Image 1: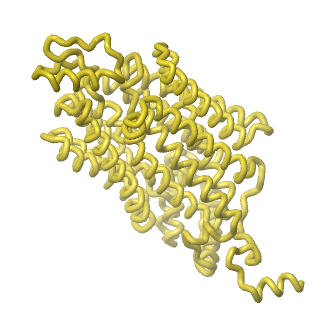
Image 2 (image 1 turned 30 degrees about the horizontal axis):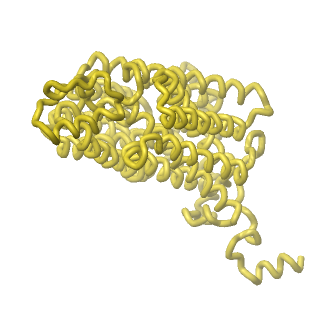
Image 3 (image 1 turned 90 degrees about the vertical axis):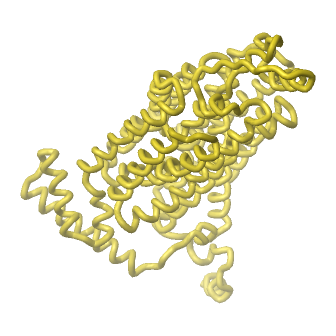
Amino acid sequence: MSNFTFMVYGGLSPVIQSCGDHNFEKVEKNKVCSVLGEVQRNESCHVNTTIEFDSIANEFGYFCSTVYEIKNSISVQMMGVLLGAIVFGQFSDLFGRKKIMVICSLGIVIFEVLASYSGSLFIFTLLQFGTLFFAGGSNAISNVYVIENLPKKHRAWVILLISFSPNYIVVSIITYFAGDWRTLLRTLACINIIPIVLLFLAQESPRWVVQKGDLKEAREIYEKIEKYNNSFSPERKNILDFLIQKELSILDEKKKGKKYFYFHLFYTWKMIGYIGTLSFSLFCTAMITYALMFDMEQLSGSIFVNNILLGFLRYSISIVFSFMDFKIPKIGRKFIHTFSLIFVVLSMMVVFVMKILELNFPKIITVSILTCASMTAQLFTVIVVVTGELFPTAVRNIATSFLQVFARSGAIFSPHVFWLTSSIWYPAPYLFMGLLMLVNLILFEMLIPETKGNPMSDHMPPKGERIFANKNHLKKQNAA
């Protein structure tokens, strides 16, 4: 998470205080660059700046007309996340979760240290692309590793506990004390040594070992875990042997069965509606979430305090929704998704109207943006859960992988949302994001059913429902 959000601080633009005898302290943030441009067209003057955090943008002098280069750098770095998730996700299926996570963690540490010595934005971008390449792989594998190793009843609260939300608070505090981007990268590299040590103490995912058919190694791993938990006994050993044999039998049946690929996600018109809507929803959610994060420097107040508040709000809202979903049967996935989206759309419209009318209420804008960003975080959880509950077992993992491409693509485009739309019209970013999320809301309401409490499907739809169903098969079906 710290690597994904590093450029929230690393790309922080300096605040322009003055240029020669021209003081800009009382000029509105959105007008400073245009006023500076007019001054520099008429005279040569030295630009004086201040900064909360000594960022890359500040050290290398990227602000106003050159800030787009920082945005391009962020997009290139985010491409590393997408590529890493694809490459290392495949490697983890071939060589194991633990080994690849160790490699990814080592890669993160090495590239973070190298990036901290960068002498230009170009070199930094290349090296940080490497960091996020390994971070993307680590993130993709760790989610699977946690699910495969934890009992069902412990998965939800553990995932909630180690989610991105509380880490916003931790990273903000670390960044504040680091003071500059080079020190921050080296500090993060030191912190990333901890998971390497813990991984050497951890066991390989026994589920992965069973899937590879290595019964002996799977038994040894389970026995080590049982002994560590002080729950090993001859009775438990017999139960484990039985479960491993049962799992192997299931895998043998799967190997004999039909293979499924990405095109099977478009098996029926209904499945096309599902995958299309969820892809669009995840793309929009990722793009807007990261866009708000990377533009947080424009909000009033301290960027450190704002990020701490963001983490607190995200975490609090997640806990409330989790409790409601668990305790109140009538509150399902669509309620949480719809409520969150309505809140996001209304928040965007509030900020949009305030920008049009040039109302000077910075605290209201800050609170609206932070709560909006907190609500978008809930959408990720809903989409992941709905995907698992909608698609049949045969294509469930394929659907999840397919959607992750759209999530990463949204993150790649996110740095340019404010930069491009505000160049057309200053309030345009909020109108654009609000309308996009409104379309998201309408499509989700129309095409995605409520999945809470419904049994998950283990089988693909009948052949008669295929888009390109065989005519002879249809005739036989109709005759029957």
